[in-house]
Length: 258
Image 1 (cartoon, rainbow, N blue to C red):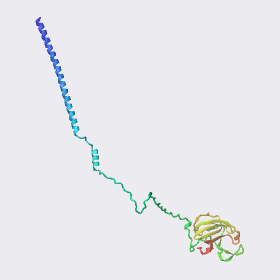
Image 2 (cartoon, helix red, strand yellow):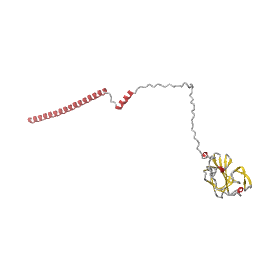
Image 3 (cartoon, one colour):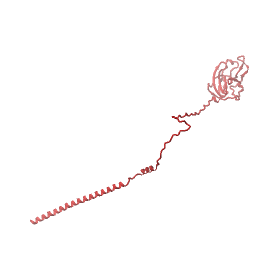
Image 4 (cartoon, rainbow, N blue to C red):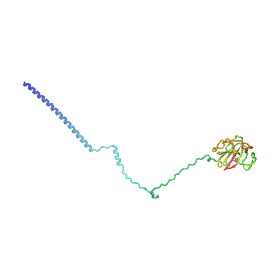
């Protein structure tokens, strides 16, 4: 019985020792872990303190653009701005207000465009185109009277009367402008043409005109046709009445024809 109790006691002792050893090992391991964690915390704290110390000593890093701006600011000289004083010309009187003299504008005069009538020119030495092919029935005569068969009178004649068939073409004697168209009982339908330089041509006994007042015409163009004669030329027959004027006075057309 005693032997059995001893065995039991020894077993309990061994179990106790084993339990105590396990508890001791567990506590020792926990202590080692705490010591390791504490060492790690101390190391981190030291590194943080060293970093703060270094950052307080080393200046912050500047960028290249900031460095360039600083260099330019250093290079830019300080310029002192001196206000300008107003200068007054000695030739001008000192007044409260300066009155600017008006500037005369020069306007270039444009010459008026030359018209057809401005270019008209007829000289006494120039020849006229015959207005109608035919015989001269009555000559120009302002120095002496000549006989008019129809009127049975001797009269002055400021024109030439050229015989021609009815409907014969009548030609313009020179370049010019038609200035008047009228009808009278002596010469019937009558046209006046400005030749320039004071010369005018008068055509009578016409019909079927090709131009109007104001038309610009050239020598040799057909102005119209021979009409039936008026009662003042019934004996002479159909004809063209042609008169040439210089400054309003009749001149002999035969001296100007070709």
